[in-house]
Image (cartoon, rainbow, N blue to C red; front, side):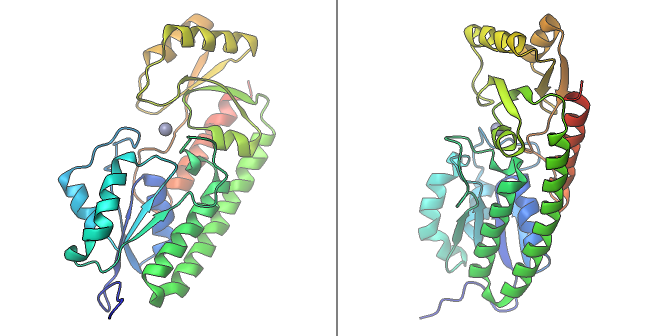
Length: 276
Ligand SMILES: [Zn+2]
């Protein structure tokens, strides 16, 4: 009987699904594990379908880190199968980590990573999974996670300070991505154009959104990078709103500092837009 999770002296392979999880896992792993993201840069997680190459990558991973809260529906079937078949790909036992475990979930809303207060928990869950898969390097993973969480605590304090002093607390956004951020930092999502990117808004819903904007005297609407949206443009024109771009971090680049950089870029956008 052997329970070796990896060949001796070889790094474990860790797969994350989306860019924020890559940043989290890369900071915990340091040089002790190989981390790769499954979705290519530019591919959104709400409506994704796996390629044969993706399937191969997942089956060869020692650790698969999912966001959870139903975001990776396109992965569920595969994971159920792969837990049984991964042995044939040279992986004795695959660990599937749900990064959302222990987070206070807003029903059916997967955008947990947009609040650093959730990111603390996600990073700890990732650390636990790496320690389980590669106990020899446990001390490194624990140290790395502690150091990264300190950086995230710094980010959290910056967000608390800046959001606390914003003149306006209510916003309208393109899809329902900023609910956790709003909950944790005292803001309110007054309305969304569409609940999820794949659901087109009905004319009735647009009318409701317009009424909310007028009633709450909202001046700003948040779009997303690289997403030209007719409804946003029309609303902005009709109601004389300013359009700003807030990043949902659903697509992005793969390096350790990326999460903090994008969160700080969002903070700059909030400072500009919510103080008018
Ligand atoms: Zn989303």
